[in-house]
Image (cartoon, rainbow, N blue to C red):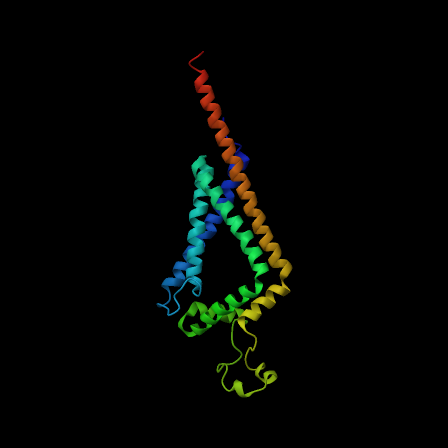
Length: 222
C-alpha cells in the first residue's frame, strides 16, 4: 500500500522550489552582510541583509521539513509543516484585517521606521541602495539638497525629489493595487493548496498505517 504519488510529488516539488528560493535568499543575505562593514543601524527592521537572512532561514527550515516529510512519507514532519503553514495563514489574515482597520497606525509606524532608516542613510550601503531605488535609483545632481531650502517647491522639484519615500511606496501601491492584490491573493491560495496537499498526504499515510496494523492483527488468527 502506497500513498498517491501525484499528491506526494506535487507537494515535494512545491516545497523544493521554495526551499531553493529560500537558500538563494540566505546566500544573498550572507554575501550582503559580509561585503559591508559593521553598520550603526544594524537591526532587523532597518537592515535589508538581515531581513533577507531572517526570512530566508525561516523559509529554509520550514520547506526542508515539508520536503523531507513528503519524500519520506513521515507523518510527524508533515504535521509540523502543516501546523506551521496553518499558523502562518492565520497570522496573514489577522495582519491583513488589522492593517485595514488600523491603516493610520500602520502608516505612522512605517513612517517612523522609514525615518530611522533614512537617519542612517550614509552609514549603510544597503540602505542607500534601497532608498535610492525607491526614489528612482539616483539623485538628480551630485550636490543633492544644496541650497534647495531657499527655493520655492516648484523650483526645488527640478533639482531634488521632494516626495518622501513612504509617499512613493503608498503611491506605487495605489497605482498598482490590482497587481499587488493579485500577487498577495495568488500567494495566499498557493499556501492553502500546499497546506491541503500536506493534510491529504497525512490522512493517506495514517490510513495506510491503520490498515497495516489491522492486517498484522488478523495474520496470526489464520
